[in-house]
Image 1 (tube, helix red, strand yellow):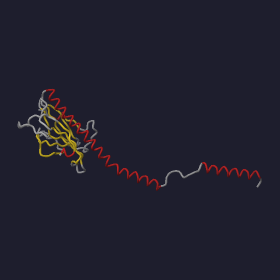
Image 2 (cartoon, rainbow, N blue to C red; image 1 turned 135 degrees about the vertical axis):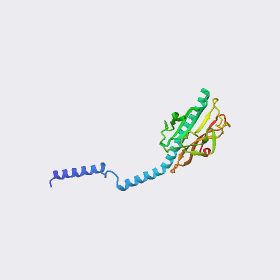
Image 3 (cartoon, helix red, strand yellow; image 1 turned 60 degrees about the horizontal axis):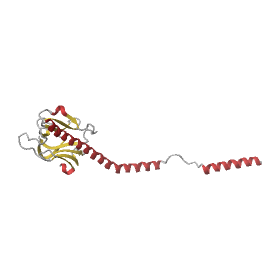
Image 4 (cartoon, rainbow, N blue to C red; image 1 turned 120 degrees about the vertical axis):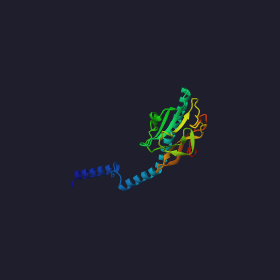
Length: 218
């Protein structure tokens, strides 16, 4: 082998060695075990975080719905004072969609044309929230809160304010009960109300309203 050939061979070996030292090649991608470990870690973290996130979303949902109920009651009271007419606010759950509904209307009118879904602007779907009241008839408190009751035109779940914006008398002429409650709750898997509740309580004959939560709403 002549000197020129040896020199070329030496140069080639040197270049190859330099390339490997400064541009080392490695296998691209991940091994199956590495991918499985990453997937397992993500699954564990998701399992830990999911319940907390779901609970947060549920609380936000009932909070927004409760704000809508308070706004409807305040609207009815305000309209009664403004127009010097008795105004009613009725509550129900749609039989088909299972979405809570509210109607604000002058007393004596049928509420049928005044119903509005609580889901409007709130992005609440059917069965995501339960509506309940402790009303047995207009301005009359029952002994307990009943959820997801369907509207009955002969006995609506209704709160009525008179022309001065105070609670109107009952149908039998007696003074209205206080502690009238409209309750929103997160449903459980069996569609019963969970302990996560928000409510609006009409506390006095003057129509004073307050928000409550959880045990306040029982």
